[in-house]
Amino acid sequence: MSDKITLNIEGKTVDCPVITGTEGDKAIDIGKLRAATGYITMDPGFGNTGSCKSAITYLDGDKGILRYRGIPIEHLAEKSSFTETAYLLIYGKLPDRKEMDAFSSSFNEHSMIHEDMKNFFDAYPSSAHPMAILSAMVCSMSAYYPDMIKENPTKEDIDRIAVQLLSKVRTICAFSYKKSIGEPFVYPRHDLMYVPNFLNMMFASPTRPYKLVEEAVQALKVLLILHADHEQNCSTSTVRLVGSSHANLYASISAGICALWGPLHGGANQAVIEMLEEIHADGGDVQKYVAKAKDKTSGFRLMGFGHRVYKNFDPRAKIIKQKADELLNKLGIHDPLLDIAKRLEEAALKDEYFIARKLYPNVDFYSGIILKAIGIPLKMFPVMFAIGRMPGWIAHWKEMIEDPTTKIGRPFQIYIGSPSRDYVPIEQRG
Ligand code: CMC
Image (cartoon, rainbow, N blue to C red):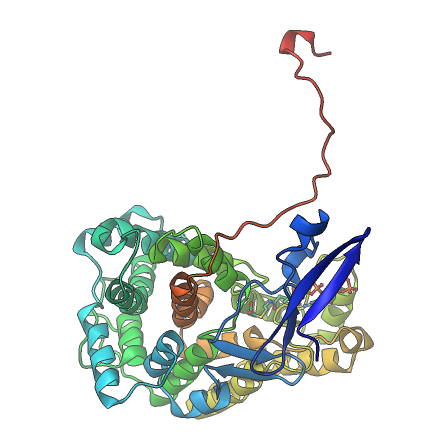
């Protein structure tokens, strides 16, 4: 097998090394193409472009495989905890008991936010989207912990910011929810694990203790694990791109949160429930919405359907659908939206339009049903995705910044604007 591909363009040749990954994936390194031939490659939306080598997550979209550091997500969802999965993603190995205990206890140490930052919550209108609050608060952490944002952070600095972000983000999210409903903040507790601690901060109040429901804790844990990383998606690529300028970790992750917010990415879980509610209110005719999604003039897409990489099934969606069923059964909830979701999936999967384009339910299609059953308000759905994705963003930023071959991200373009022309003073313009 050749270790290089020779391109010949207008009589100029360039040897492009072939890069092969652990699982046999192949890339052509076109790094010398422009210098040798004057050509760049064009790939809007990066549908066929690799931006880095990474040892964090492996994804095979045709086979429906997703592994973190080599371990299938099915195993992690069943056997691991969110904090252990976070450790695995960030440090590349499963922690031993001592490492796990130290990692968990540092979550407690960093769970509070700076008292002055609490004033921020008063400045936001109660209608503020929690993603706006989250991205602003995460970026603001760089102002409150300035000693952590050195030009060349040490390994210890990065470790500290990582655990700080993982822990504090949960507090920020719960506080922003409390603020939106006008209830006092509930502080994090040292005796609770990551997920129960979050649920307690969300749903306990001074007059009403929150009774933890084990099924809800388990379902949320699985959801967070399944969202923890997804290699070079839009928000993670944003984190890497922003971080490639050596912007600090808080700023880079704040940018990632903004990228995640969009309805084509992490905002899709909110959009799915809004769509299912609309179908429900409109009489539940799923065929009507399948037809609308096929009509290119409608501007409507089936939210929670389709994926850039998965062309067979999304392994996360498979687990989440099962968890949604289990949770609703255990809680004795009958949610008509789950029925609509199942009927919609069935109708779409039989439809030639969806079959031809290999459009399947993605991670967001059933996750909203779980979040709704737990009592998480709709606007917080993308925030839950952000809490889940935090370990992945940190792992990618760390991998990027620790790699001495990383360059600042700076793509090219083909200019299609006006050719050179003279400036005309305003008095002389017609
Ligand atoms: N409903 C109807 N048609 C669709 C849909 C959909 N959900 N998704 C893709 N298509 C069509 C699209 O119109 C195009 O058709 P044609 O070839 O005739 O022009 C074809 O399928 C390919 O679509 P694309 O937009 O070129 O595909 P993409 O890889 O650029 O986009 C996507 C992927 C996820 C943005 C897109 O499928 C989509 O908009 N889905 C709905 C939003 C959604 O659920 N997003 C969450 C993604 S999973 C969570 C995450 O990791 O972000």
